Amino acid sequence: MKRPRKKTVVVYGGTFDPPHSGHLMLLAAAARQLRPHRTLLLPAFRSPLKEEPSEDFSDRADMLRAAALAARVPAEISLFEKRRGRTTYTWQALEYFRGKYPGAGIYFLMGSDCLPGFAGWRRPERILASARLLVGRRVGFPAASVGGASPVFLKGIFPKVSSTFLRAELYRGDMPAAVPPAAARIIKERGLYLGSLRERVLSRLGPKRAEHTLACVRLACDIAAARGADIRSAAVAALVHDYAKELDPGKLERVCRSAGLAVPFLEETVRRAPQLLHAWVSAHLARRELGVDDPA
Image 1: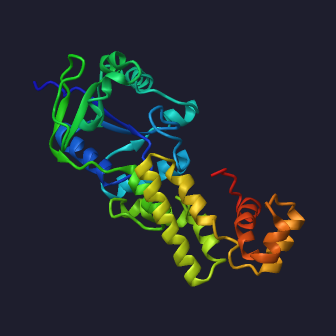
Image 2: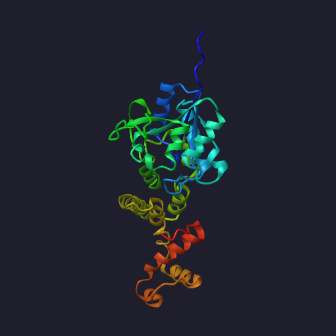
Image 3: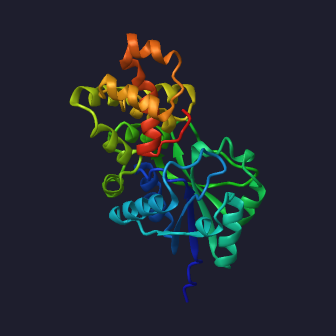
């Protein structure tokens, strides 16, 4: 009599900010090779390794669910981290799933680019005690053992897709090809990745000023990415920097005086170059009308 196959559960965690083709390729390969009984997608509520997610948990989970469904990847979203409502480490999640699925083989899916830094993760020994690593090879990051444990390597080579650079493209108003169509629809419908802010700002500007503003956003994102600065803050600052540029000088002066804006040499600026007041008025109106309170 043929013995029943041991149940297997694949856990794939990440910020998924946004979900992209690289995620789906790993998931599809894991489904083909392991044929798991269950695949759990674990969006981070707050990642211990990265900056605060650009979009909230619900939006990221919805994008991921839609992308996986459209790609026919058999997977389900786990709300474990959302229910905890705080930073969750991988070892904590895997110990939870090991308890929830007793007797099952738990596999933690990741790219080989994560292996070199794995020893620096929180409690790596407890990760390995709860699950076996299921790894997709990426160019430049060869197969390797981890802490004496031998990961299971998926067949093939998988692309390294940078979520950081995808977000930069989205902030600029572009839709990267690596973002699955199902996720792209949600981004557009909900105005994610500064989409709503961008629409409100550009609706106030003429065509040439709008074109200039988008060019500034692109440049700001490129500079921030090159220097390791916060790309979202750079994009927001570039978006609103000319928000009041097209107001007439009289209106600029009235806003400065009525709002008590601390403009250096206000009287001289009003007399000699009143259009320069747009910088202070843009910042003021961005806070008041758009809710932009980022000091950048």
